[in-house]
Image (tube, rainbow over all chains, first blue to last red; front, side, top):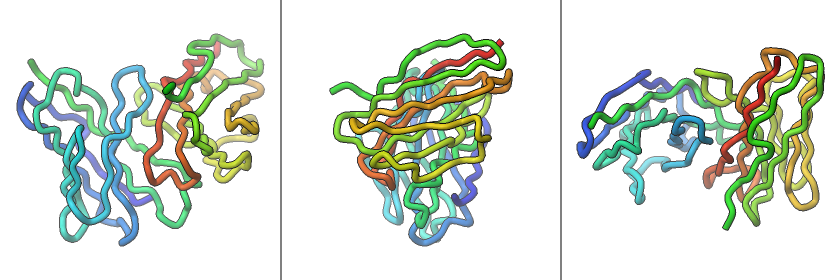
Length: 113
Length: 114
């Protein structure tokens, strides 16, 4: 997997947009960027993934820079339930998924009331 | 539709014992992966199975083994348990082996080795 770098923790006020950065400067041209989150004592939850274009779903938006060396996950209106550890992952494309996902330590996002 | 189910939810074992953890994937999913998560760390990949065959293995000793059954459910076995095996064991399923459509994780089995 491409190495990803995330800040260890971030705070965000409830109702504001939470912007979580991720650096993946060694990513290959055909490797996707995935975001998962893990709420305390639960399994990781898939949020969104993308290759080149910006993506949006009901949970979040993903902005990928043109050179693909970094991305930002945006939670548009953060709630207390969004407090979790957020993982940015870039799995090796040629592995066919057989390498599994490399999670790293992620960003602990704390939503403040 | 039921999500990924894992059993048991909690387990306490003694050093040297053997443990079997079970996972039922989402209906229609043919790929199951296992992860170990120790406190304070992200999940670490152990195995991936697709269509009942091992397709990938992480950096874990031979004490760890797994298998996938014809109904695509899976078991993770750990022999000669060590204190360091205490962790949350997570199972994830996906439609196909490549998992590019996103994995769905279960809530895990919390294993404590004493």
